[in-house]
Length: 431
Image (cartoon, rainbow, N blue to C red; front, top):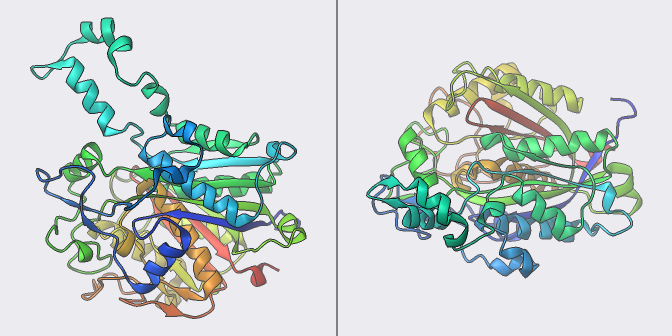
C-alpha cells in the first residue's frame, strides 16, 4: 500500500431510467421514484414480460458530434452523452498535449446490433423461415441498407467512438463480463492508473437490451418479473415475494485521475476509488453458488486491496437483482465477509428503482456510491415490504438514510460467474 498511486473520482456522468444526467438520476433516487414502466420502444404485447426500465426523453444529439451518430447505436449514444457529462464535471478534457496520458476503459453489452438492423437482414434474406445463403452471398453487400452496420456492431465500437470523440490516445480496453462489465471496467482503469500507464481515464459502462432479442433471451431464462400490471413495484430485491429482475438500459461514466494531480489543480473529488476485487464462481451460467462463494472472494479482495476492514464500511450498494437465488447468495456472502456485524451495515439495491442495466449497472452503481459519499445520504431499497427471512440485513427499506459514509462498497455479479466488488472512500478518509 505504501507509495501506491491513489485514484480520485473527479467526474460523473449518468443516463438512466430516472433521468438523463447526474442530478435528475440522484434526485429520482432520493425521491423514491421508479424508472420502470410499460415497454414503449417496441411492441412487446406478445412477450410474457412487457415492462422495462427505459431511458426516456433522451436527446440523441446529446452525444455531441453528429458525424459520429451514424456509427452509433442506441447504447452508444447513451455512452457518448454520459461520458461528455463526466468530462465536463471533471473540469479537464484531453488535449493534443496530454491526450496520450488519457485512457478509456468501457464495459460493453453482449448484443451490439440494433434490432432494426437484424429485422432488415431477416426481411431481405430469409424466405419461408429459411436463410437463403446464396442470395446473401451474391447480394449482401449491395442490398443491405446500411453498409457500415458491420462497424457499428463490433464489441469495440463504443470504445472507438469515445476515444475519437474526446481525443483519447492512451491506454484503452473493452471489458465484457455480462453484468459485471461496468464494475470491472472501473477496476481495470484503477489498476492502469496505479501502474502509471495513464494519468486520467474515462471509464464506465453502457448497455441497451430493451429490444425483442434481449427481452426474449431473459424471458426464456425465466429471469424477468412478469408483474406487468404493477411495473413500479415489479423490482423488489430481498422481498420474499420477488419473482425476477426488471430489464433496464443506460450508461454511467466516471473520470478517474491520479490523486495528487487532482489535488494540484484543486479538482472537486467525489471520492477515492480505493479497491477492486474479482473472482469467477464457475457454478452455473445464471446463478452464484448458494453459499456466496465467488462473491465472498471478490468482496474480501476488494477490501484488502483498499486497505480497509469490514467494520470501516458504512454502505453497501448490493447487486440485488430481485431474483430469489441471487439475493440469497449475496446476503450469505455479506454475512461471511462481515461476520457478526453484517446486520449493522446499511445495504440497499438501487435496482429497485433503476432496474438492471446489465453491462452499465456496475458503473452506474459506483457513481451512486460516490454520490452517497459526497452528499451524505444513502438511497433505499424500494418495494421491500415483506423481507425474506433468509436475507436478514439492514436494507434501508423504502426510504433514504442520512449520515456520513466514509467507505462504500458496490457489488456486481454477472452471468457466467464473473464477480466484481469496488471500494470507494471519502476524500477526507483518503487523506
